[in-house]
Length: 218
Image (cartoon, rainbow, N blue to C red; front, side):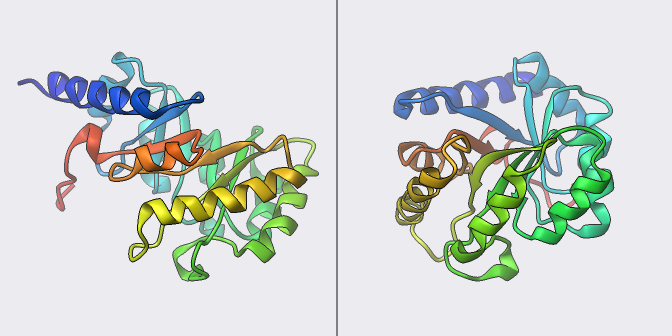
C-alpha cells in the first residue's frame, strides 16, 4: 500500500466516524506535527484544507510549502508569537491576556482565536481557569481586528474523556450566554473525537488516526 493509499484509507475512516455522530457541522483539522510536508501535500490532494501544528518551526516550514488554513494549537511562548501569527490563521490555545497584547501588536493579519480552558486547574499544562476566562474573552471580543471563535480544551490525562467533555459542555453553555457569537468549540483528538463531537465540538484535531503513529526520530 502506498503512503497516499494509507492516508486516504485512514482519512475516509475518520470522516465516516465523524459522520456517524455529527448533528452539526464539524471542521476536521489534520494534525501534522512530526510528519513531513509530503504527507501534508497528500492530505491537500485528498481534500483536506485545515492543518494543525503544535510547534512554530514546523508550522512555518510546512505552511510555506502547502497552502491551506493553518491552526496553531500548542502552548504559546511570547517570543514565538510574531512568527506564529505570520503563518497561522487560527490560534487554539490563548490562555493569557499578555499573549493577546502581543498578538495585537505583531500579528500581520486578522486571526480567529480560541480560548483554552483548563478543566482541572493545572495551568502548567495550558489553559485558563473559568474565573480568568471571561476577562480574556472580553479582551479578545473588543478587538476590531481579531475574532473570538470560542473555547478549546484538552482533557487531563487522568480524566475520563466523556466526563471531561461533559464538563466542558457546561462551561461552554454558560459562556455562550455572555458571548453568543463565539460558538465554536475545539475539542477532541484521535482517541476521543467522537465523544467530543457528541458534546458539541465543532473542530476536532486529529493526527495519528489519519497519519499513523509518530516515530520518535521524526
